[in-house]
Image (spheres, rainbow, N blue to C red):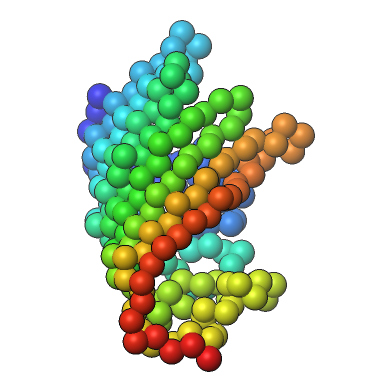
Length: 193
């Protein structure tokens, strides 16, 4: 077990992200990390209890303003023998939008599959528009809320979906997918054009 203070996120770039030009971040984390390794020095057990007071994330291939994060708490657990990967808590603020997320899943044969539950208590339509990328090839689904909805607030938003990371054996790159998206919310004082 160890305590970390003011660890910069860029030390994990080669582990988590295949294309370092895709994402840039200025995040400093503190907290507790417990890790155990097997005889081949492969991670067999890990527990994270991490706090990020504030930071910035930029997705370079998407024309968008940097995303500000603050008061983020991450509590997660990995067990290689049981093939379990759990995110017991991921909560905080993204561009001042309060969120919480849980995910309990499995890792096997180069795949990570996580059923995810996301909750946002309240968010203004304007704040949602600020998060939607300005990609030239954006789909109508992504551009519709930004250009057709104004004013108002979404309340009690929940979304459940399956998140997967699969390592492509041929390209050796990770493929990230979401599927089975289900959501529920209420709204007030919304204008739709």
